Image 1 (spheres, one colour):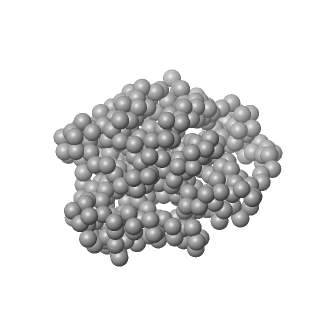
Image 2 (cartoon, one colour):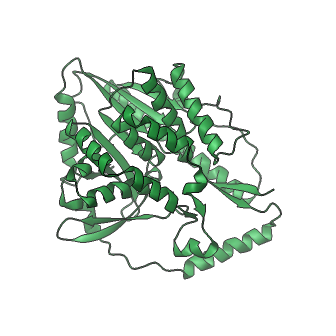
Image 3 (spheres, one colour):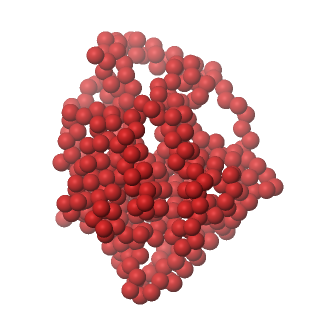
Length: 401
């Protein structure tokens, strides 16, 4: 039997009797080949950072940096969005994290929420990585629940992700061929969906998706509804590219070139998984609500598509297992820090905080984490926890008293 090797959120397959020397030779060969490989010349410039994509102001913002004049547009709009509500209005945020195929967890929660009849219409929805995919469906509401369920319970991962051959690894700069995944995204985000996204944006609701720009080492926050309002084929392609880029695990999936054209200049930017910057986000970290949020209640719902508590597992002392375990530990602890930031932000502003994560009661020991059955059981786990009202925590497990 072939033994699986996990790299982050991916599983590759290796022969069980491959000796350490052969593995070392393989690594050296890959490094040599990668050094010899070349990529087409890019048309990139730091100027693109301050340009308006699609020649339209306010389509994206940079997290951790609000020096750009356009960044203040979202600041004003968020304050107006909250400040214009009646005193009895309750403002609702939904933040969806990364987690690969663990996105099935949030799909189950959202479907159960709809079936219970008490799912809010969220004023702000944000998504990273697999959460970017879920966020589009969540933003559009219960009408898209069945599409979301099918995505995470009826689509075998092998249909979307295939291991590249050794030579294609370097020609495509990725371990995994994601053509099936990209086709699925582009098919789902069609002209009808773009029209719906634009309509919801007109109501004042926000959908923010994060990608990581490798050129400037910042997270771009894209206002998806505003892009949809542009209404062109280029706008539709840009939204598709953003969702694909936000899910592009560096090295495993191809990085995504995003074209930035302001009508006068045109450059490309290299974007990857938003999870490189943050596992989950609420709004730009520099945005503050102090002056406008005191008159109405607000709830922040955070769904972490992953675990926030450590799990004991004996780790084999070999390259693959040490790398896998180290990377999963980094990702989990990054997720803990990001969730804690949102929690303390909510405490500072007097907002209600609700957190869901995959708890230790989910039995994954007998499941292949990259198999359709795993996704189905995780979907059902999220659905049942939400239905039984045993889901939401008011504090992250890392600081629970």
